[in-house]
Structures are given as structure tokens and as C-alpha cells.
Amino acid sequence: MASLSLPDCAVMLLFFFATVEAINSKKPNIVLILTDDQDVLLGGMTPLKKTGKLIGDLGITFSNVYVASPLCCPSRASILTGKYPHNHRVFNNTLEGNCSSKAWQKTQEPNTFSAILHSHCGYRTFFAGKYLNEYGSEAAGGIEHVPPGWDYWYALAKNSKYYNYTLSVNGKPQYHGQNYSQDYLTDLLSNVSLEFLEYKTKHVPFFMMISTPAPHSPWTPAPQYEKSFSDVKAPRNTNFNIHGKGKHWLIRQAKTPMTNSSINFLDNAFRKRWQTLLSVDDLVEKVVKKLDAIKELENTYIFFTSDNGYHTGQFSLPIDKRQLYEFDIKVPLLVRGPGIKPNISSKMLVANIDLAPTFLDIAGYDLNKTRVDGMSLLPLLNGMTQNVTWRTDLLVEYQGEGHNKSDPTCPSLGPGVTNCFPDCVCEDAYNNTYACVRTIATPADLQYCEFDDSEVFVEVYNLTSDPHQVINIAKTIDQEILEKMNHRLMMLQSCSGSTCHTPGVYDPRSLYGCCLWIFRRHRIRCHIRDYQK
Ligand SMILES: *[C@@H]1O[C@H](CO)[C@@H](O)[C@H](O)[C@H]1NC(C)=O
Ligand SMILES: *[C@@H]1O[C@H](CO)[C@@H](O)[C@H](O)[C@H]1NC(C)=O
Ligand SMILES: *[C@@H]1O[C@H](CO)[C@@H](O)[C@H](O)[C@H]1NC(C)=O
Ligand SMILES: *[C@@H]1O[C@H](CO)[C@@H](O)[C@H](O)[C@H]1NC(C)=O
Ligand SMILES: *[C@@H]1O[C@H](CO)[C@@H](O)[C@H](O)[C@H]1NC(C)=O
Ligand SMILES: *[C@@H]1O[C@H](CO)[C@@H](O)[C@H](O)[C@H]1NC(C)=O
Ligand SMILES: *[C@@H]1O[C@H](CO)[C@@H](O)[C@H](O)[C@H]1NC(C)=O
Ligand SMILES: *[C@@H]1O[C@H](CO)[C@@H](O)[C@H](O)[C@H]1NC(C)=O
Ligand SMILES: *[C@@H]1O[C@H](CO)[C@@H](O)[C@H](O)[C@H]1NC(C)=O
Ligand SMILES: *[C@@H]1O[C@H](CO)[C@@H](O)[C@H](O)[C@H]1NC(C)=O
Ligand SMILES: *[C@@H]1O[C@H](CO)[C@@H](O)[C@H](O)[C@H]1NC(C)=O
Ligand SMILES: *[C@@H]1O[C@H](CO)[C@@H](O)[C@H](O)[C@H]1NC(C)=O
Figure 1 (cartoon, rainbow, N blue to C red):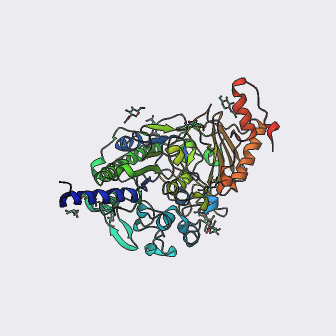
Figure 2 (figure 1 turned 135 degrees about the vertical axis):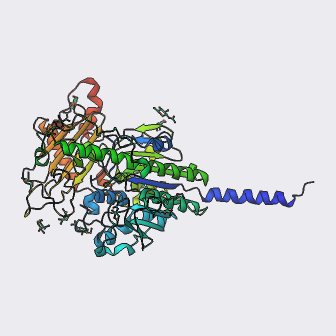
């Protein structure tokens, strides 16, 4: 009997449609999980055991990841646009500093990666959690404002909170009180994310951004985690509770040793930060399991990162971010997804400005049509770590908040800066304004920073010999290297798009860098003056 019976035909038809579906759904899904204020250097990933297993062990862990600015709003703007702060023009956490301002909405928001994924790449997009600190302000259109490019929008009004908050649910307010089982924000984000995945449309790729309040203050853990890590204290590492002599004035003024109340406070904050991260770990596990259950896990990239680092007692500053040191500017980045080999790590110098071009590259969008300052990580994800030409330096820029010249008193904290606990140690001021070049090339691990303060202060660190940035070598480093780094900084501060990727001082594509690469092994000195211009 050669003729097909009806059931066989149905099977064949099913097979046919399944194949069409497989072809149509070839574009991978992307999930970005973004935490708030999670460091990587002081153990910030330690509580996230399941995340480590489900993303890191099954994908790639980047160990040199920096933020373009160590403050929530400028950093988030860099993630959304792929640009340095001097190009997206979000400089602090206030409307005046363009945080979620009308000017941001008009000039930057229409060009975020989500807007492009939505309009040009056929992605269905979902956002849940903290967006930009001033999101929802009346002066910026209130929570009715839903940024372009998001199909599903569950955004927190204003800054991170765990209870008693308002969400914009597609532009409509939804108030939440303080009943754990209905309101705990990290869990709620997990629930709405699973709901979105439940109703995903078969043929349409999706992008999800899940942006948790944890581990930001007020560090409210879920009830089941209130007793966790009861004996954990902030690490007493090399730069804990030491005087930052030879550093800029803000560090020099910090009282050393810190008072016991400051130390108790920061230990408590450290512990509570870890407790709040346990709920993030649960969220990650639930999202991964759900992706598996709906059979999308193999076709989904999952990115896990944070908006900036954090310190607890380093150089006698109790708690905050906003400083140029590794603990504040370095963040975790774990990625799993199609084609990424399991359990690998990369020391390549990457930054949060690379996320937007990476997402667009994954979606097949021509990056030449964008003006992003970052670079796609896709070649690194695909394992091309040998042949790829990669950057050797990055820019970090920060504009100090909270004080102005007519209000010079420190520690009287200005508008927007409320962390005057427990001992009012000054952690920021208008002149804590700086820009740095962070260089990581095979022969160099350096940081060069300039302050916009009355001393035009310069800090330079050789992280090869001084990984904890204790000794400022600005006065002892080779004068020619200092000059080269100064020129490089000026160039990066005005760079845009591809000019942000030109060869740095130590890049093998530059003459000096090339000399270092070739002659390093032969002990021939490369004199930088031979390679000017
Ligand atoms: C990943 O590597 C680490 C150490 O390199 C090892 O302990 C762990 O078992 C590995 N995990 C997997 C899933 O291969
Ligand atoms: C805010 O953004 C707009 C548009 O990019 C820009 O013109 C303006 O200078 C920015 N404001 C500040 C204070 O930088
Ligand atoms: C939430 O708001 C209620 C009522 O205003 C207040 O009593 C409670 O302390 C708040 N809870 C938190 C965690 O902020
Ligand atoms: C909290 O919400 C749960 C589930 O809706 C409900 O059973 C419980 O009574 C609520 N608790 C309070 C204190 O309102
Ligand atoms: C999340 O969903 C779980 C399971 O349905 C439920 O038990 C929990 O109360 C929900 N939490 C929140 C904050 O909505
Ligand atoms: C601060 O704590 C240290 C160590 O616990 C203790 O030796 C010291 O007496 C305390 N100082 C004050 C002023 O309480
Ligand atoms: C983008 O521009 C670069 C350099 O101009 C070129 O080599 C590359 O082929 C372009 N890519 C596409 C997809 O057009
Ligand atoms: C690097 O490029 C060379 C020549 O193009 C090629 O033979 C080699 O396989 C590449 N290596 C990797 C790791 O991609
Ligand atoms: C934020 O930046 C704007 C523009 O530079 C400035 O006018 C404002 O004073 C800053 N706000 C704070 C709190 O520093
Ligand atoms: C400077 O600070 C003073 C005192 O806090 C405040 O009254 C004034 O508005 C501030 N000026 C600017 C330009 O932010
Ligand atoms: C920075 O500002 C503070 C507060 O106004 C002032 O005390 C300090 O001298 C200034 N330092 C420099 C180097 O500009
Ligand atoms: C940094 O320190 C290393 C190790 O001590 C040294 O070899 C290197 O020359 C130093 N670099 C600079 C620029 O001082």
C-alpha cells in the first residue's frame, strides 16, 4: 500500500510546519538580567550559586568588564544606547543631568537597542524592573510615558525599592504595598517574566530585560533569607579601612580608621546585600527553567550583569560607588547561548557600552547603521579569541553629584544624595569629577585618571604591581607614558562611534604598542618618544 493514510499525512504536514517554524524562528532570543549596584570584586557573585551553574558554567564569564560610569543612571543609559556618557549626555541621577529627562526621551530613547530590535529586527520586547532613576517623574511625562520599543512594560517608578512602590504597567499605575507574597519586587519581576514566556508567540524572537532592585539599598531581603549569611562580614582586603594617601581630596578627607559605627553599618549592609541577591538567584533559576520548559533555552542568549560596582570600607569610604577604583567600575558579566562553549572565561577588555551592539549583532542588524561607541561581543562569544582585533583601552567618565560651589560644605549632602549614614562621611561632591583611561594589553595593566577639580589632580595605577590601587604613581611614572596617556584620554573624551576604537597607547596596532609586542621578549627598550605621532 503506497498511498498515505490520513494520520500519516497529518504527521507529514506537522513535520512540514515544524520545519518552517524552525527556519522562521532562527533568530535567537535574548534575555538580559541586570542587577543594581552589584560588585564583582568584593564577592558580589558569591551568593549567586545557581546563576553560576546555570549561566557561568554553561557559558562564558568575562573577567575584565567595566562600566562607562560608576553610577546607575549614566550607566543604564550606556547600556541602552551603547554610548559613552559624553555622547548620550546623561551625567547623573537627576532630571537636570538628563536622567530620563525630556531631552533624553527626545534624542536618545528612540535609538536604544530595544527600539531598533522592535522596529527593525522583528523582536517582541519585554521590560520589567528598575529603568532610569527619574523614570516616572511628573516633569518627564509621569509613568504614562512608555519608551519606544517596548511591547510589554512593567517599570518601577523612580529608584530601587522592594516594597511600597508604583509600577508603570504599560503606562498605567499599579501600586504595591508590603505583603511579601504579593509585592516583593524581585519575586514579582520573576512572576511577570514567567508569564511573558508562557504567552510567547512561536515564530517571533523575543528580547527580555529584567532589571532587579537587588542588591541596591534599602537592602530588604525576602523573609526566608533574613537569617542567611549571619556570620558574613565585608572582606578585610588590602585597601579596606586604609587611608588613601596620595589620592584626590575626597579620599584624603575620609577619616581613618573608620568609626566602629561605620564598620558595623557597612558589615550589615554587606550581609543584607547578599541576602537580597538570593532572590535574584531564584529569579535566574526560574527564568532558565521556564525557557527550558517552553523549549526556547537552546535558542536563547542569557546575559547577567550589573550597572556598577560597590565598595564597603575601601580607602575608609563606608558604602557607595562613584569612585574610579576597580571595586566601583568593574562588574560581573556571564553569558550563555547558542554556540557559546561551556565553562570558559575571557580576559578581554569589555564594557557595558558593548551590550547594545552585541544584542543588535545577534539580531542580525547592520551595526554600520548605528553610531554606537561600543563593540559587539559576538566574535568573543563565538570563541574567536585568537584572531579578533580587540581594544586595549576604555574610557570611564564621572561627573560628581551633590554639591556645588556655592554650597562647599562637606559632608552636608546636597540634593539627590541622601546616604548620610551612619557618620556622614562625604562620598561625593561636584568636584569628584573625573575621566580615566583603563588599559589592559598584554604588557600593560594601567589606569590613568584626571580630575576636574581645583588641583587638576592626576591618579595613575599600575595594576600589575598594585592590583589594589594603593600607590598613585602619577609622579614617578615615565613622563612620556604620562603624556601619551593624557593625549589618549583627551581623544577618548571626544570620541564617537568608530573613533572610540582607534588604537590605544599599548595597542599592537600603534607603533609603541607594536614595539612592545615584538621586543618584549628580547629585552629591548621601546622608547615612547620614538613613536610620537
Ligand atoms: C567549570 O569549571 C570549573 C573550574 O574550572 C569546575 O569546577 C566546574 O566543575 C566546571 N563546570 C562544568 C559544568 O563543567
Ligand atoms: C541633555 O541632553 C540634551 C540632548 O542630548 C543635550 O543637548 C543637553 O546638553 C544635555 N544636558 C546636559 C546638562 O548635559
Ligand atoms: C510601607 O508603607 C507602609 C504604610 O505607609 C509603612 O507603614 C511601611 O513601613 C512601609 N514599608 C516599607 C518596607 O517601607
Ligand atoms: C498577603 O497576601 C496573601 C496572598 O494574597 C494573603 O493570603 C494574606 O492574607 C496577605 N497578608 C496580609 C497581612 O495582608
Ligand atoms: C509569585 O508567584 C508565586 C507562584 O505563583 C506566588 O506564590 C508568589 O506569591 C508570587 N509573588 C509575587 C510577589 O507576586
Ligand atoms: C571599636 O571596636 C574595636 C574592635 O572591636 C574595639 O577594640 C574598640 O574599643 C572599639 N572602639 C570604640 C570607641 O567602641
Ligand atoms: C561595515 O563597515 C566595515 C568598515 O567600513 C566593512 O568592512 C563591513 O563590511 C561593513 N559591514 C556591513 C554588514 O556592511
Ligand atoms: C586564525 O586565523 C587563521 C588564518 O586566517 C586560521 O588558520 C586559524 O584557524 C584561526 N584561528 C582561530 C582560533 O580562529
Ligand atoms: C546633575 O547634572 C546637571 C548637569 O550637569 C547639574 O546641573 C546638576 O546640578 C547635577 N545634579 C547634582 C545633584 O549634582
Ligand atoms: C547649590 O547649593 C545650594 C545649597 O544647597 C542650593 O541652594 C543651590 O540651589 C545650589 N545651586 C545649584 C546651581 O544647584
Ligand atoms: C572640592 O570641593 C570641596 C567642597 O566644596 C572642597 O572642600 C575641596 O577643597 C575641593 N577640592 C578640590 C581639589 O577642588
Ligand atoms: C608595572 O609593573 C610591572 C611589574 O612590576 C612592571 O614590569 C612594569 O614596567 C610597570 N609598568 C609601568 C608603566 O610602570
